[in-house]
Length: 227
Image (cartoon, rainbow, N blue to C red; front, side):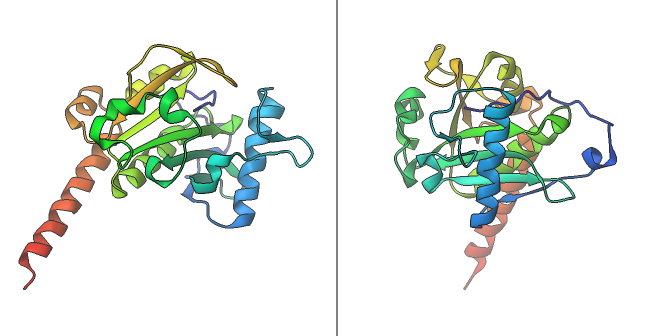
C-alpha cells in the first residue's frame, strides 16, 4: 500500500527546514530501521488511525515479514529526522505474502518473477506533504530498480493518490480490489522502460531513464573496446 496525503508539484514555504533538500538513502543499519518502523507507526496508527495487522502497540512500531528482504528507503531532514519513506521488494528475493496474486503480477509475463517488484509503505511526514518529497522518493526507488534489473513494478493506492501515480507512468491494469487493511484500492503497474508512455505524461522518470540508457550504452562500448 502506497499511502500518504501528499499533493504533487506543490511547495510549502512554512520554514527553511521544509525548503531544504532532504537526504535520501537506503536504510541499512539496525538503529535507522528501528526509527523507520516507529515512523510508520506515527503516520499510520497515531495520525491516520489505521488498523495495522503488524502494529506493535507496546513498542509503537510497524514491521512486517516483507521487511525481511526489503529495501527500505528513507528521507531525512537537515536535523536527521525521518520525514518520508518507501519500501521496495524484488519478487526474486522472497515470498510476497500474496501480493503477487493480489496485483496479478503474472501480467508481466516472462518478466515475473525475475524482473518484477512491488513498492509499499510510501508515506510522508505532514509538514512535507505539499513538497516534492514524494516525487523525489519515487525517483530514487525508480533508479534503484532500473540499476537492479527491474522492468515492472506494482503498487496499490487509495483513490486520492491515483492521479499522482498516473503522472509518474503507472497504469491501472486490473479492476478495483479490496485490501484487508486499506479497503478499496487501485492496483497499478509501471513498465520501467516504456519511455514513449512516460514521455507523453511528462513523467519525472524520463530523465532517469535517459541517463540510465546513456550509462548502459557507455558501459557496453567500453566492454566491446576492451582487448
